[in-house]
Length: 286
Image (cartoon, rainbow, N blue to C red; front, side, top):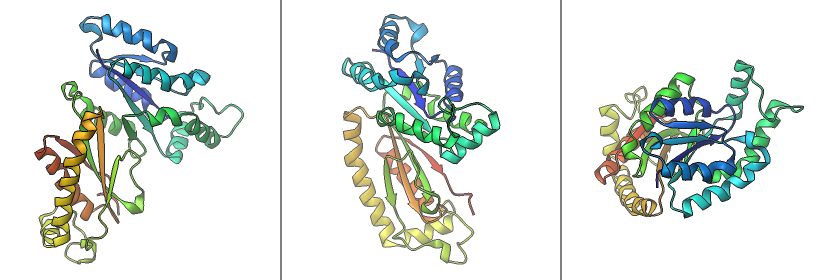
């Protein structure tokens, strides 16, 4: 059966831009297909030739009451053996408010109520849809150009889609835990290079910081245990059909310990046969 990619999420989170990116990557994209027609569309894709080898659907709050049927439809497709992958796009409320203000577009639910209330209502109405997602993409920190570049980097190799795609994100707890994280590791138990004057202005990518961390027995032990843990988990995720995995590693500010550990984690994953993309979310923040 040919796979179906479903793009969904909050209004203003970047779904339309994502659909255009996937079109550029060769996908046949359908925006706002009624959810009741998804099984019909899946059958059409299965019978088609090469013209529908890659397809993507955009489903969102515009479905209204019919959105309640979406979880059952997706479950039925998966039970029929149709590879159905769901990308959920979201962003922080203040970012969504800013985007609607800049574009002057109305929120689909904002008739007669404040925009912030409409966003909160949409989050609540879409909870079941979000719970089905294979991957959550938080677009808060991206502008349109950055989001387009990120999506092209992440999804430009369709031949990789049959395997689990791993990502590692370093972050600072002072800026919040990444919303897209599947696994979160807190390494604030390690001595902080920030308080070493010669290392304060450097990052976990600098050799001096790496040398400092490697001298800590706890750092090496953490990586050993992390390797064992990931080696135990990932085959199970693959067996259960999980398509995406985001490992988040956090320290206080996201510049030293988490950056070095994220690079090391990506190397461990690669050694085990799961090449991982690395993002250092907060490395440039003061």
